[in-house]
Length: 416
Ligand code: IMP
Image 1 (tube, helix red, strand yellow):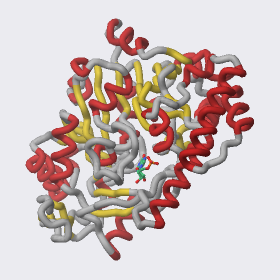
Image 2 (spheres, protein in one colour):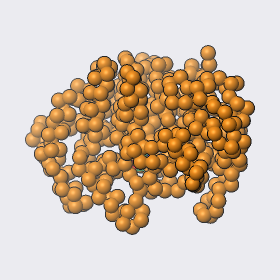
Image 3 (tube, rainbow, N blue to C red):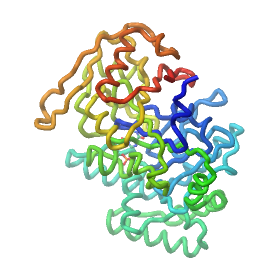
Image 4 (spheres, rainbow, N blue to C red):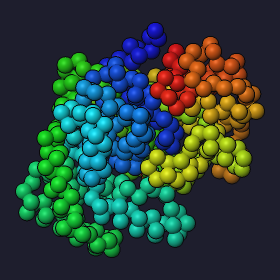
């Protein structure tokens, strides 16, 4: 039995190190058993994680991937932006699969609500940017506008679900006015209101303050913080402006959950054995031609939220090192190692090109292993060159790789 899981301590965060879609859900799934609370801090339905249970594939956007572990408390934190019909749909999907969720779900009063009109504003802003050739490639889930309204101090928080109908309507009218005057986007006030009222009935019993997590700390319960999006998409530290609108780092997660920084006992950095990105923005190690197509097909690299083909490329050590420093990673989870099984050689970007963005990234070419690693569960059983690939990452990032994903199934994981 590995000593890894006990070594994580009482509050562990799982954080993406690249541009999202690293496959954080699998580590969460494995770790959730050993924790009492699973908490998501930020972002909204721009995230997408695929979960298999009851012989069916489910794609969730708001509920954390740990939600289907019966009896674990599930928290949606203040840093989140929540599209209510999506949340209701996910709750229903869990219940239809026979999994009770309402009694153990806590939604922060402070989380912001994503209105339907925010999606239209998102689309309108993208349209304007794309005319100037600078489209971000957002998920069009209204995330940016939700955080804009939040920062303008004009957003609707989950606590508003407790308001009487007349007050709620007045709030929606204020937002409709801003939407029209600032963005030229007309709001269907009746539809927004109906959606809010329907959600109020269903969700009011789950609303809570974030002191619920402080109580968990006091009771010595173990908290697993499930990061959303990833470090290079962080609004402050990512590849701005091609980022999301929330804080995606470990510190951002603590902020979104109202947890004191000193409570964090470990941070697992999750990175693919290669790299992907959806949407615009820099990608120094992006592959081209056959190599990109191979990675996309073998890795199934299509967005879980939008279905868009992801841009694919190679691991970039400097980016991993930046992510590791910002988040204070304790260890790596390298995912999807098996996607590289057929490669003759594996390029790994080893330096930055800050001085000249056009300059080619310096690569080190590691020999491929040309053998299946699918389902391997012991490091010693990996082909020698696959072991070498992992130790190369450890040497270059000075951080141990403690979890290695070797396939899509739950059990396809090496724990060291
Ligand atoms: P937004 O979060 O929808 O505003 O999109 C901003 C950028 O973040 C776009 O490039 C999206 O593709 C990217 N993004 C947002 N959420 C995710 C995610 O969960 N995985 C990968 N990319 C994401």
